[in-house]
Length: 297
Image (cartoon, rainbow, N blue to C red; front, side, top):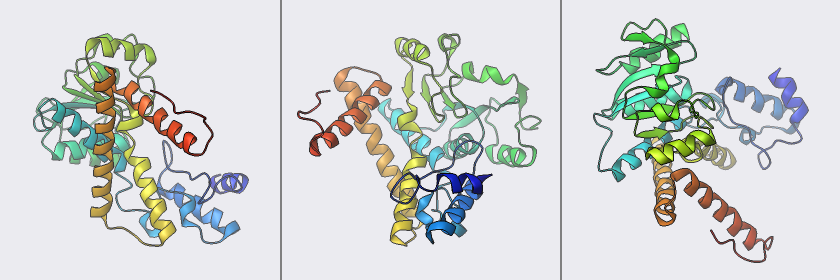
């Protein structure tokens, strides 16, 4: 199916056109198929797709990049409050690529992952789950259900779990007007795309809950996809340390830019992120003379 799909879209993708990357229900293997099939038509073209296996010219660090970006932005938000990850109680909704890597990396910095839920069940341990053991369990069973290192609970309760930090890392619209008023976390880091509805956003802002928006928090994946594309175009692979170092620099800088606008305009981080994005698009359009005057935001 993937190869036939590539044969149908091959004219609209390419190393200097539209470059796919993995998301839900796809993985590095599927990205490798895309590269291989496209190359049959246009010759060796590793830069046509990102998120590929290392053996097929993928980038070190791409697999965990989105979760790592979540960690970096969370660290910056906590720093603004005079805190660190050490001792923070974290609830994670979704335990796929983003959720599992974010949980592992955050736990390595001293946080306690007190609850995790997937599409079937939830598991909790107030002393902190053994994330490595939970990842191993999920690799075998494809769900957190049945994990012996914690107590089971109804998966839907994860959003209002008693935790300092909530990381929705699965699907969209899981935070809505009916549960936003009950959320107990003081920081929400959107590892998923669109997990918060506009109505819920208004409630969270009024309650003073810090939301690090998806457009910022989960940008680590697409950032390292860019790194992979650059490596493929240069035919030169970076070391993992360089990938992670560049990712940290970009994510921390991006958070600071959004935070500064939020403070300047007295708006929430999502609004500030949109302001920054529109400013940059406007500046590019002005430089190309697609606009006659600068956009004032």
